[in-house]
Image (tube, rainbow, N blue to C red; front, side, top):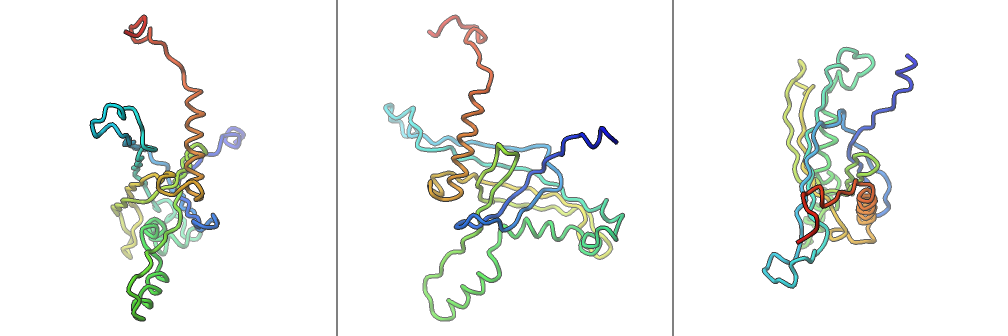
Amino acid sequence: MTGLRSSPRLLKCGLVLVDPESGVLRRSVTLQYNPDVLSRTLQLRSTGEGGDRSEALRLTGPPIETIKLDAEIDATDQLEFPNEHPTAFALGIHPQLAALEAIAYPSATSLMANSALAGRGTIELVPFESALTLFVWSAQRILPVRLTELSIVEEAFDQALNPIRAKASLGMRVLSVDDLGFRHKGGSLFMSYLRAKETLVELAPTGSISNLGLGSLP
């Protein structure tokens, strides 16, 4: 038992929704299990694509970074103890799925407000502003993101057809200062992410061109 108590607590990854103006926390969505695979793609943005030789090495801004992961949600173990987990026993994993899906929806209040404006003859309706979504994967990766894709496969159900096991595939696009600006809370978080990355670069092992079979550059 002593060894178990001294074991480090396993951190979880997840999504945090904050108010884009005040930065106040609205909701935190912690993934039940950390995904085994995290796929990231960086699409570079440069001026050299047009063929101008003088611009070949110039970058126009941060790369477009996209993230994909698969999250597993399972209430099987909780169903064995209904008194300890009454919500799981009554609804399965509906609440967990709803928490993810709600990120993709405008609120019912916003929809009703726009409907009321349309009913009063307002021609131009204000687009819905969602919460600022942060993808958190350790203290080194706190990224402002936009959810671009959410695919859910429900794999098992209880007697009331509540889903009890599912896999959710998330696609996200990192929002940089080009998207949010430097004064936005999300822009500030992106700059912190970029500075942390630059600090990690200094800690990376440095190689030698001799390792590449070169004595000097041609």
